[in-house]
Image (cartoon, rainbow, N blue to C red):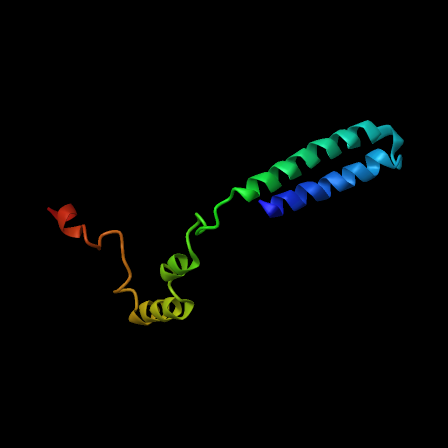
Length: 104
């Protein structure tokens, strides 16, 4: 939440600069509104971050994600073995585990 608060604060500062300095006089009212709105979101983000739990993140951990990924060298080795075996090891439309069911 602190990251979000910093982003809202940065946007608010940019809006405040253009709204209160008079650099762009024609859009000053809009820039002031953006400043107030983003400042409110920044304050809310800081307040919410005070009550945020510091537990484990809810996303999938890197260890779980990496455990399910096949290393590249194993993948390449398997592809080379299949290519060297020739077309007899490749699956055709009439081969596979359900061939017996189709033939019956």
